[in-house]
Image (cartoon, rainbow over all chains, first blue to last red; front, side, top):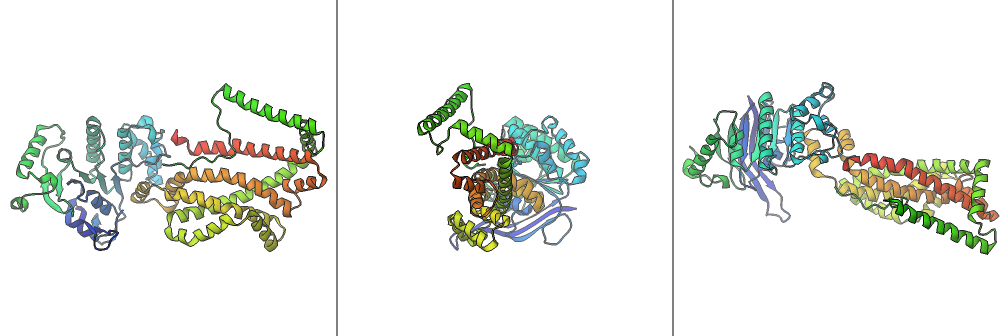
Length: 259
Length: 263
C-alpha cells in the first residue's frame, strides 16, 4: 500500500520584482509505501522544508499532486499527520500534558492515551510542568509525543534533532525508532546528516541543489537495531561518498544516475 | 514573545523590602502633613483637613448614600468595560490579522481616537436620550479605539509557527482562538483592561454629571453646587479606594493566573 505519493511539477516563490521568481522544487516525484521510514537528504537551500510543508498541506501554492493514503484524488487529505518541526513549537501556556492532549480527540483523552505516550517518552514526572521549564531534549520528546498522539498516517520530521548535543540526539533517535517500530507509522524524515539518515532510514532520497529534485533513491538494507556508531553504517557512508564524492552537495555523477 | 510595555497607571511599583515600605509610608505621611498644615493655615471650608474629610466619608457611608452611588457608578463602569473590551478585542484582532480589515477601518480608528470624549457623550445623549443605555454606550465608544489599538499591536505579532502547528493538527477555529491566539494576546488584553479601567472611571463621572440623576458624578455635581468640599473629597477618596480594590483583588490575580506559565 502506498502511504504517500508526491508529484511536484514545480514550486516557485514569487519574488518582489516580477520575473525574478525563485524555483524551489522542480520535477520532484516519489512514493513511500506504508510503514516505510524514508529520509530526505539534501544540501541546505535545496527545498527540504518546502517539500515537507507541501506534503503537510501548510503550503498549497505549487503545481503538482500530493496524495496521502490510498484515497486518490487531489484534495489535501484529511488523514491525521504528525509534524515535528526543527524547533519543538510547543504552546508555552499549556502544561506538557495539555500540549499533547490539545491535538487529541475526547475519546483518546479519556482513555489516558496522552499520559501513556508521555510515559513512553519518559516524561511521566513532568506532565504538569510548563514547557519552558524543560530542557531542549525534553521539549523535543513532548513534541514527539504530540506528533504520535494523533495516530498519524504520516509523520513528517524536519531535522528535529539538529540543535541537540550528540548523546541527547542519539537517545531521541532511539526513542523515535522504538515508537516507530511499535506503530509502523510511515515517516518522512528530512536531514542534511548522512550518518543520521543511514542510522534511521529504510530508504534515502537525495535532493539536488535548488531547484530540488531527487538525484538518488537509495535503499538502506542494514539490519536493525542500528547505532549511529556502527561500523557498518560508517562503511556504507564511506562507500557512498567514494562513489558519489559530491553527493552531499546534491550532485551525482551522470554515469551513476540511472544505475 | 514580546509583551507590551507596562503602562500600569494604577499599580504601584512593587515593594522589595522593608525600607521600600518605609519610604512609601514617609511619602504618605508627608502628604497628609502638608494637607493638614495647608488646611490649618487656610481655616476655610474650601480646604477641609484630612480629619474632616474622613469624618464626612464615614457619615456618607453610614447614611448609605456613598455606597449606593458608588455601586451605581460601578455598574455603569462594568457594563461599559465589558462592551468596550469585547468589541475592541474582536476588532483589534481582525485588524491585526487582516491587512484589508486594517485598511478598511483604520480611518475610523483615527477618527475615534481623536473625537473628544465630551462630544461623544453629548451626541449620545442627544441621539439616544438621557438614559443609562446612552451613558454606557458613550463611555464604551470612548474606550473602544484604545482597546483596538493595543490588541491590534498584539495581533500583528502572533507567532506564525504556532499557527502552523494548529493547522497541521487541524484545530477547529474555536480551538485555535482559545488555545493559540488568545493566550498570545493576553498581555495586550490585560494592558488594555488596566488602562481602560483608568480611563472609564474618569469618563463615567463626566457622563453622570451631564445626564444622570444618580452615581458618583451626579453627587459631585450636587456638592459642587453647595460648595461642600468635604463631601466631594470624601466621595473621591471612597471611589479611589474601590478602584484600587478592584485592581488588587481582580486584575492582579487574573493577570498572574494568565501569565503563570512565564514564571
